[in-house]
Amino acid sequence: MLTLQKATAPNLCEGSEWIVVDQHALAEQVARIAVGQYRHVSKILLGADAPAVRVTQAAKKDAVALLSLKVDEKPWHRDGWMFQAVSWIAAHQNSGVAIRAPHLIRAHKGFDGLKLELGEKGQVIAVVVFEDKATENPRATIREDVWPGIARLEQGERSNELGQEVSALLETQMRSFPDLDVDAAVEEIAWKEARRYRVAITVDKSHAAVEARMALFKDFDSCAPGDTSRRHAETMHVPDLRPWMDAFANLVIVKIFNMPDHV
Image (cartoon, rainbow, N blue to C red; front, side):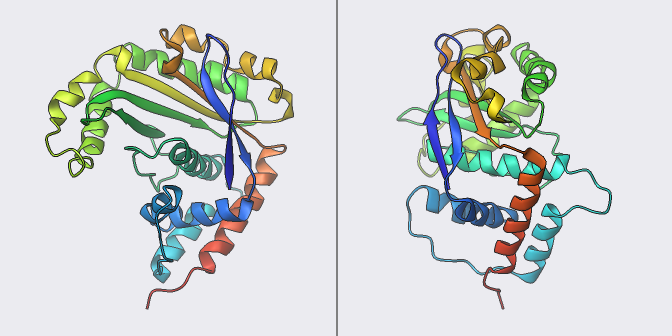
């Protein structure tokens, strides 16, 4: 599956490198997400007993469509969705508390992912906004797309969208924290100190060294100033991105076809 190897850049950011150690297990988990069984995957990642769940033919058909390309269709959106699914899995391996369910829409216009960091009584310590990018040009993507987006969030843009997402996520915590005041908790995210950012991106061997990795995330502290804990940087080394994604999508589809049918 995935191994998360800690990789910090002093005074700049915290984070890890994702290493795929079992591609078949990872494909199985992405397949379960694609058919709508993210809770099954979550249970496995949290170490709980999770027997195999049967899948309807309709769910399989929709999942295969999500992972397939039409004639002459560019792979950007499909690959982006798969990377977001892998990012969700990595987030659970790092911490399984209050992570938003993965979406099943290509080119989703909302946040790539959200995670809440909660205190012992359910109070919001931080909301972590995910920026997940499967790209062959990581530095340009970060500089021209990710940093401006984070800067806008720091200026207060999309606060209504963020508040609504956090409210929905907090409501899922009511069983664990019955006295949780959702409205008061949402107010906390209005403060910049409560917002944190997790940038996950694909890289090739040119960014494998520590110095190159630090250069990749240069200026993270400028668009999201403050303590290093506000800035999380995640990388996944993929030697040849598009062929790797093609092969991985095909493997995920095989996993989907092999799932037991619901009759």
